[in-house]
Length: 146
Image (tube, rainbow, N blue to C red):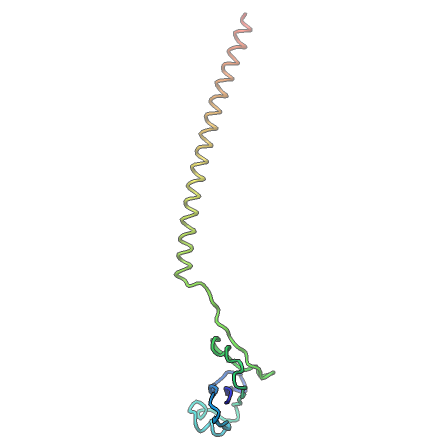
């Protein structure tokens, strides 16, 4: 059983080829030279500019199944995984915004109605106050006339 083998560019760390792990007990490990003969993507490169990392069987298995891509950190020769960013799909975001907009419009109408009722109540209070002042003024005038 052999773990995956990652061939990468020595100057950038970009992985050029990932040879999957082999889970049979008779699997034979290949050399860099053999891999350059077997894989076209390697044949197109200068072997001096390419290096590889041989991983243990099962090492990073779940990472390789979920990541978007991977490369090699040239300083540490460790694998850097780029995991997918799970975001809400645009159609769902649009639907959520539409619902929020509808809720805001309903709330706005409710507030406008409450404001109109408040203004109406204030107008009614103003009229009642003016009538009370007029009655008071009339009472004062009639008392003075006596």
